[in-house]
Image (cartoon, rainbow, N blue to C red; front, side, top):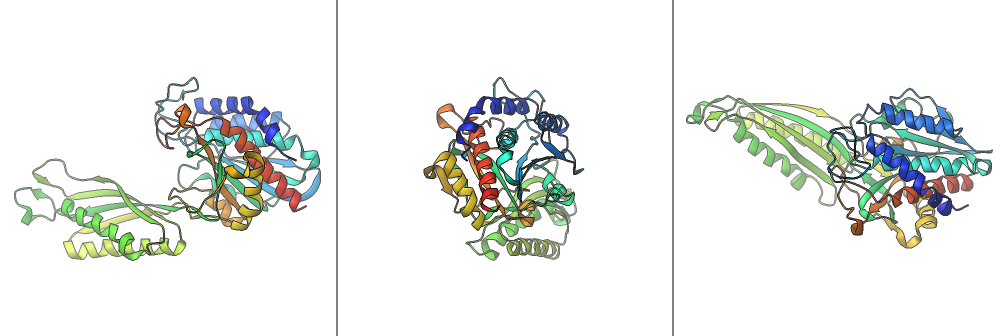
Length: 395
């Protein structure tokens, strides 16, 4: 069974699906229309829906004619709270909301998988679950809720797989790698409380702006001097606010930081040292340092055996072995697909969606982001192939 040609024949239909979602984007935890469209699609095609009571996420089940394992495939369905600057016929109609991360493409591709596998279910040994997951872009994310509400059960899911579009990869290429594939991503809110006063008399104050400068520098030395150089770690202060006028020393400064890591041990170290820097700053500068931490998604770890046995061979059948790239290192972005991989073997790969000749190169989370829609059928074919081949190999 090879899904390349059947998927190619769905190309125009998948493009229509994607453009409809792109025109009607919805942010995390608000995907009411998107969820409704997906449900109707599944019902119209006679695909069973498993009710899991987890927000706007939708789970479809394609049951094969013969007993066997169960394989799950995931697409996230939410958009981002940002304006779209592309002048295209399918431009966002919801002001200030945009599919700037390709989740519209993921959803369309998984709908393609549904059509492909539903058409051959009489040959399938086992089942395929279709995870249309809400709220990937906002902590606590939709994947955690799906796991907690039984998406991986009834029937028991044996393996799980997903793809994410990437304009860093030309369309027609797919990338997979074992080991860490996305970082743990945590958020800190800091407040340095000093003693304000007149800018001409700093000796009578405790200047939180000056303290913040040293505080930021000290945070940066955590990675440069405490984390082994071969380990991935990031501490970024993305926002800082304090003061109102050049001759007024502020009472306090507030900062926001993202903390990222590719290893649980490193993650623990970063949090330990950050708290120690906060305590030390209070002693050294006679100020108060308050902080709140929001633990984000865990490290996403791909199963190397699954990648080599199922993902890479399946992709090679669709795009050719020469167009399957073995990823050697992880990015530092966060991804809540990690929650599925904590529970089951599987992998999360990258689907080429860039095309320099068409001017499609803008990165995700930018207002000019778009994809080469040829990635829709290649993504659908790759996922369907992996699912079918896994079930065949494990019947």
